[in-house]
Amino acid sequence: PDTLGILEPLQTYNFCKLMREKYPDLKFDFHAHNDYDMAVANSYMAARAGISGIHTTVNGLGERAGNTPLASIVGVLKDHCLEADIQINESNLNKISKIVEAFSGIRIPVNKPIIGENVFTQTCGVHADGDNKGNLYFNNLIPERFGRLRKYALGKTSGKASIIKNLEE
Image (cartoon, rainbow, N blue to C red; front, side, top):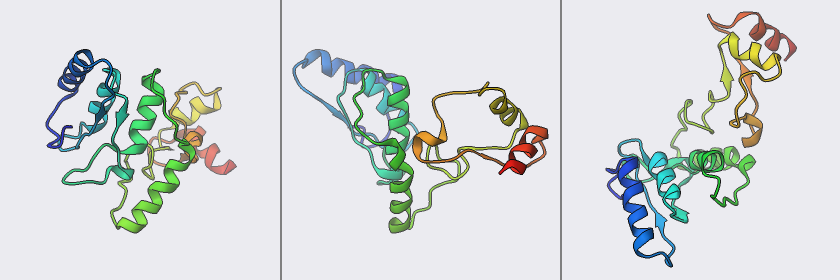
């Protein structure tokens, strides 16, 4: 556990790897707090070191700065940790996050990865133009994967492609 949220990713990896090497037949979990905003990175490194369970909370709720946010670590592990066996339906993450937000009264920041309101909103026309050109800027972090939709906001960097996307909508 990193119950004080003071570890950094390399420390986490080294500590977890050492435990796995010393006790290869045991299964370990990792429990991170987010005091330095490193809970996701530390949880990722624990998984890379062979830790088989990651403690999470919906929306990262928890004591002080919170714990590892479920939605964030699911995305990271699925995309960057090929050996991770994650049995979570990603399309339900946004829905459960909204339910927890409503019951806890703790608002989800609009820029929170995966579940924030603005995360899949493009303002820059370059992105809309790339989407029109066969997903030129494609990556695995697509909104549909998480039960979301991409939006194209209009702003000072929008350009023709963003305007067309908004007119189509």
